[in-house]
Length: 386
Image (cartoon, rainbow, N blue to C red; front, side):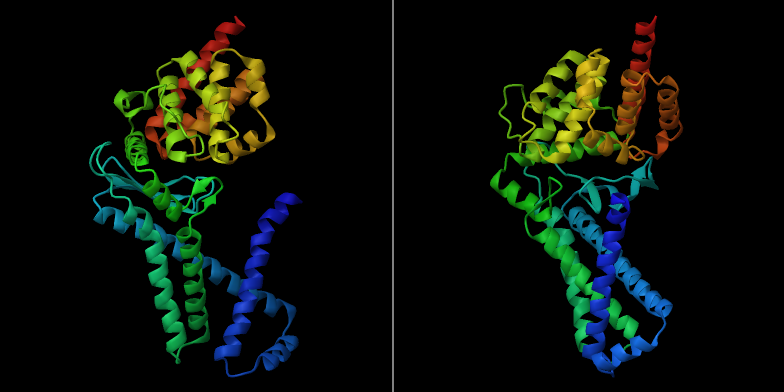
């Protein structure tokens, strides 16, 4: 029932908003009064009213989709003009990526985001990375398109009703996205565009971390394994970290991935333990990521009891929700099936699925590592059983 309500609620809210906007449009621009409109509705059948409401809701969500597309296009255009290189372009879970010199369509999603334009930054880690328009481009695209649509809606009299309603909804969805991304705030623990601009202005040192993370994503997306990332990118173990800062805390997590990829499991466990000790300061998403990787590392070290204590309902929900688009989450499910549930057929089915779909994943260097680590864990479990 809760799942049904979760999916039904946005539809009902959309229906309510759509109904209000239809009535408002009729009141402002229609040739009949709201009262006459109400009497007309009373004479209509229930199915006709439901069909009109559905059309309004679908139009609203179509306008939202277009504005998300424009938002990411704004990031793309402003990023390219700032010297960045194209990596991938995502709207909801549909992702356009450059791979082997050509464009491919894949599926990928990140909690707390409706889209993402990933670009590789210019220069090196110690250069001053141009960031303002990279982050502000999406809001600018939403705001400009919204003002244009609302201007046409307000000043052009002779146009069909549905076109007028489209311009109104398109403009309002643009203003909504501009506000949601233009006022600094966190969504699901992740900074929106304005929040990133504010933080980078306050903490110029984070520009180095931003460059490293975007460049590492570019390399891993095109097939480079985490262990091949340069040592000099990563801070020493005695570097102070603000665990509430997404860009700072992402560095030890990336380093832990390098250690896992290199088979240095004790070091990876120590590093992940240190991050997890500050879990109350971590953003929700990073806490779940840390728990997942610590669980896998503990199973590689044979520490089953502690690994089991980490496999909580929230972590299971998070890992399962992203398992179709992330080979890393499939790796966690494989480890749980093999190391905690002793369900070898299920584990082998997961591994076979990842192998079969390896070209479909966005992060190609990551999937290569994940397959190898799953095979390594399977071998450890086989030897232990003997």
